[in-house]
Length: 196
Image (cartoon, rainbow, N blue to C red; front, side):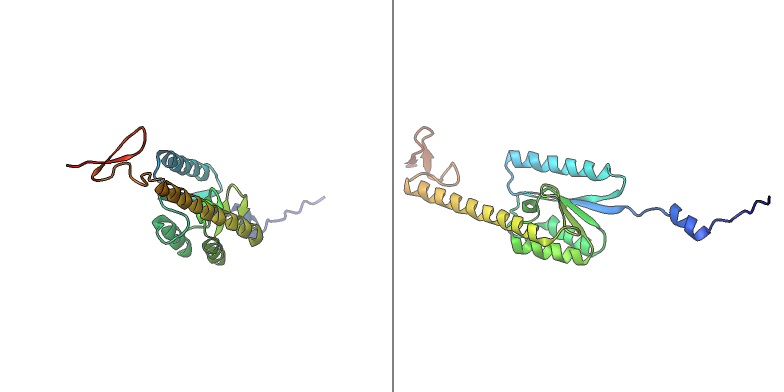
């Protein structure tokens, strides 16, 4: 019996040895105020996402983009958000990981605009809380959740304005605890004129 040796196809074998390209991943974090609890949350988010991305063997850590003490209602004043979008458009990022839709944007139109813009560049956004990947999941659920987030912001704003108006009607100090030319009684909250 004769043994016939069959040579392997080098092009097929080579395909198995190709290095799989890692997904270039960045995280976006944002807090809307600079109050102590929010800053702790901000720092925790940055550490969490840095660890999450760096520990995943299939991901390449691009960086953390983070805006501190900036509202999510509009994307214009958020410098790191703008830099993130620019880097995505320049082809430097394949996926953005963020905590939730309201952390990304609280305005439904902005959310959908950027999701669509990035989808055209084949850049995914993964919203961790909602478990939505914009390249895989449809827009319907995201649109609803984004609208809910926007409504929460509008409701909170209305409640704050109403509370401030009620304080003003009662003659209570609104804003700073110190008012030039006045002294505030700590117990009653009343303002007394400092004659000098």
